[in-house]
Length: 102
Image (tube, rainbow, N blue to C red; front, side, top):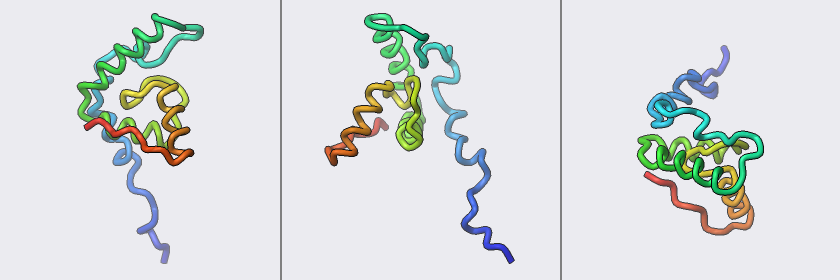
């Protein structure tokens, strides 16, 4: 008989938190920059996306997901691409990690 206790649960269980994300009510272009966007335009868009994350009930799960799978693009869990890269560097160097927003 096959041992099924080690198999993952239903996929929906792993992603259900996304259904509660504050970003579901926002335009997805807010979270992902268009090609070539730089400077104040990018900072302003990133800050607007992070403001949505700031009121999100699942920001912790989102951030944990983004860091675990190394999401390469967009604002996830209140972190930009550059902030996630900095966090990966801190973790590699053994430095203290950023606290997760609650």
